[in-house]
Length: 412
Image (cartoon, rainbow, N blue to C red):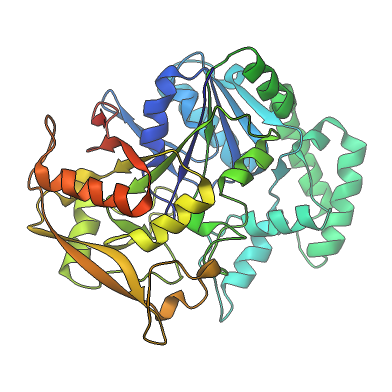
């Protein structure tokens, strides 16, 4: 029995959907641990594209059990829309394949109102305006609404009244309006409620092949990322265990997913960001526009300082290097291995929690481009690029992704 943990090692958008879909071919269970519909995992297979926001990527494989863990915050309207679209696209009823943890929290209209108000202030953090941050706040304040409460209407109404008094006393959306809406959702949500922690525990004990699916990226972790420009959950490996409700058992393969370059959406420091024609070319060739928001992504060269930090935080056993093909037509490729910090010192370690990162300037190593690589034997310049990553991060590269389709993958 093998448990694979797949998570992003940058600021999200690393191509997790494609790699996770590839790894799912052998999995019988896929579990999402944290985050909400701010994730956007794109899967290309058999000429079709699927974009998943809440449901684990294993859903496109028939017979795979897909679980949403307690660490998630769920918009039921988004989940309903996603299930309907996938049911039509896949031509089968997927409800029986999905399990939702009783402990996952529900995003309400009050959460979205609060986030929109904050993002219109003079100091926004660049959120997706889906109410995810406020939903995590109410969870931490112990006022939140769990999915399990949908099976207990009296408890649900009582907690809705407490929650409104806490975060939305002046909202025009009443408790009655939200209660009635949630009761309509309950008709199809309650049958999908599951004890995710117990189900995963038993699956492990019975030798089931399991994949734990991360969302966003490690550099967006609420504890260890570039605060305050982070997500609202723990995206590191430890957060995945906590969000599912299991502990490590020593047999995990932890695969960190990394683009051959770096991107970031929204605000926050980004030392290797390119503001020239090269950055535009990477964006255009890589189609770097958010699967969730449609926003153009900021693009830059691969940052090994940040990557080493993410590897250390996550304990990865190997790297999946994605979007290698995007750099095919570059004569020269830069890779950052250290910074000059704000005081003029050269540093090779990421500043703790990213404090001071906005003042860091990259020091680059120049490498020869590999030119028009598609498949077959790896060209020598690409091998040199991979070896430099492995040497500087002390972890092997085990998977190369050179296109969006499942078939565009090489295992090393």
